[in-house]
Length: 260
Image 1 (tube, rainbow, N blue to C red):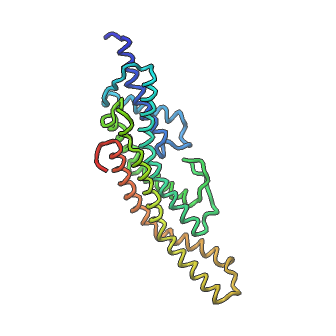
Image 2 (tube, rainbow, N blue to C red):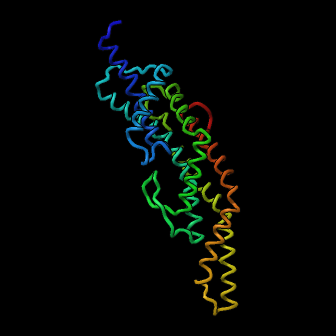
Image 3 (spheres, helix red, strand yellow):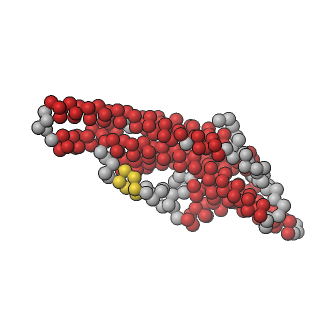
């Protein structure tokens, strides 16, 4: 076999362009894309996955590798990979948002921790929900599901992709509304229970004005919030399963491997 310039360019394009899409997914996917994961680990994982899938994906039809068109193709691969990774972030941020809502309503928002994924301070309840949802993500083989999605995308969204119309930007932004809807539905029961507790404190203050409502209400509100979270924890798994099923269906729709 002669290693001509055309053969070398074809081999490089079959490696570099899939590597860009795979690395974009790994860098943006929850868990693997966290700031706590070293960059070298992400790079070696991207290389290993790309070498493993190269024989199974279609060959890229790129004429001249060293051209401006190749730069546009690399941008396409980054968008497709980050598009899939963004869906996983939306799923887990749903429960972080729900934890923040519950924490603010129960007086537990004073305790905050650093989110390893974003590097921002979030309430401890939100961090607890994030850790729990991340463990569920790993236990349900979420990372394997999205690696399978990115491999399938090379068949449904081949290289080169004819235009950007196949990337459904509008649907991605509209699907983000599920994050707020699911977070609100998860936090609805604790928030409603805390509203009733605050109503009862208002009645107590009206009946006995000499009571120091701030000295009594604050610790009772915190303890009630912890008790309500414990009683409604079963809803967490139900909402996670529903949101995870929506994410899988929507990811499959984005890469044209099924219906929305």
